[in-house]
Amino acid sequence: MVIVAPSILSADFTRLYDEIKAVTDAGAEWLHIDVMDGHFVPNITIGPVVVENIRKKTSLFLDCHLMIEHPEKYIDAFIKAGADLITIHSESIPKPLIVIRQIKESGAKAGISINPETPFEKIRHLIPEVDLVLIMSVHPGFSGQKFIDDVIPKLKQASEAIKKTKKQIYLQIDGGINDQNAGLVKSNGANVLVAASFIFKNKDYRTAINQLKEA
Ligand code: DX5
Ligand code: ZN
Image (cartoon, rainbow, N blue to C red; front, side, top):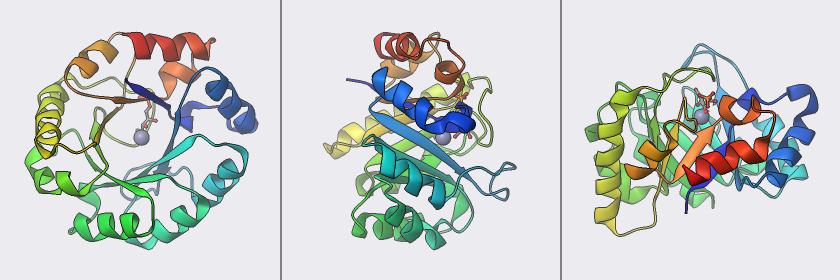
């Protein structure tokens, strides 16, 4: 079964609660929260205070994608705010394993992510340590970008490495996901599909989510 994780980056922030309720009613199980610091990526978005407020209003699984430098400084704040899963970028820190352990010891799930230009080999050794692997299919920073097809072989590599562990590790893909490529990413092993614009720019969230689930 594939999980669809709407990214609130393309939601109407003036009506954030209504937007979260709408994707919940439309069948979303996770909520993807894009955290950007203006350093690791050129954009600035959401911090722990927003996650804390979202947590008060929803029981959805909160999937926090940290596109920030020094993620180790902010893990406690996101855990305290109610994150269920925290994904860090392998490019953001020299020793990601220390932060992965920090997340898990705090009781949350931990994910590791790689940018489109980062080879899978950079994170292969981390696979048995994480709960989720995130393959970025756009350059992180903004929603609404075009899916980069070149990441498909890397998705497959990650899927094969995950199978070898015999552990339940999610394989997430994020960036430019829509009804045209959802089938392709699923057939290459992705089981958590993040989508911002495809869902929130659609008039009918249920139809959009179902299209991703059934593609
Ligand atoms: C990009 C973010 C994505 C983004 C996806 O840096 O990590 O989660 O919101 O947006 P779409 O689905 O519009 O590509
Ligand atoms: Zn994301």
